[in-house]
Length: 244
Ligand code: SF4
Image (cartoon, rainbow, N blue to C red; front, side, top):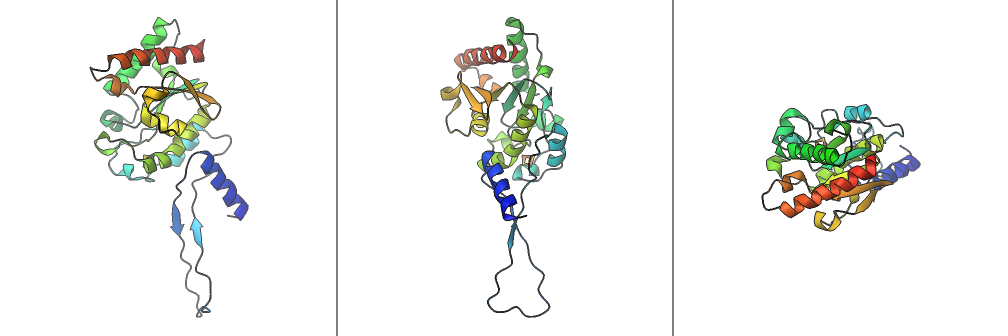
């Protein structure tokens, strides 16, 4: 890789918010004759993930993920949860990561939180006279493998797996993104602010408007009635923006 190519690659990954890259030490086979005492040490090669082609596709992203072992979350997973729904959807929901049901099925948001998300999407759409069902939108997560004990993904895991999320968003080019919960907001907006501060307003990922709202698993807790009402308001805003 030339210096220029390396610079362009690094800039590209910086744009994506990726600050950690894998390095692989490349050992040079020993020369048959003794080296001069002042010879430079063998070069260090930087191995970059492939650049996102302009015409990136979901098939290409799936193929690149393959049997991914790029972060420690591969160790406990059963299935990689890539995403589901309409791959040309004008609306993409981004959650945090797969739970037990998702890890077993390979599909996002199929457990209790997923059922609530389906109800929220379909119930709000029906009430507002918008003719969509869950399969009309696209749903995915920041990390594609289940974190142990459902813990929050760690920053390095989000950074490594986030490249696939960004490629998915780039390939779909939705009219709007809805980030569910703080982890999704952090990954998409690169912010440290929490949902309470961010929700209800429009933000941007590149040129795409982003609405942040509560994660459905938070809404399942009985004492979060106010948050439930707010999440419905946020969703109403998103659906009207995208489908009116
Ligand atoms: S979480 Fe993402 S980066 Fe980590 S192993 Fe799974 S697919 Fe690969």
